[in-house]
Image (cartoon, rainbow, N blue to C red; front, side, top):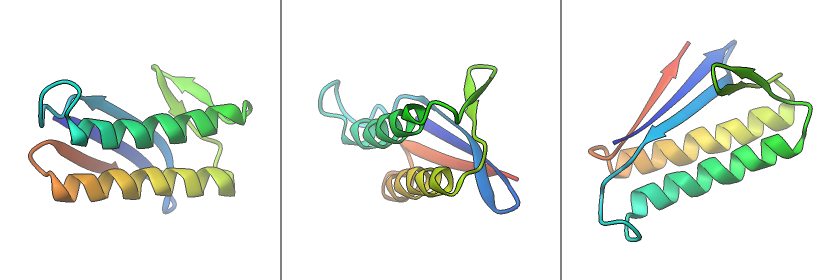
Length: 97
């Protein structure tokens, strides 16, 4: 199962982690893994391209809270949440306040 965890403060996401494997289908045909991976890699690469945004915290990223980061993390959360709603046996989303 894929586990996506987001930390939130004052209604805004500032930390995220995505781990695991969906195991929805065989390697190369797993649409759940492909969907989550596409979102995660695209958003993470975009945020990393900003260069100034990240601090490392035990291997995961903490964001500084710019408006652009807020939008990116909201997109990541909404996208993975939509996948989790369609495939609840293969993907779970957790928000920690």
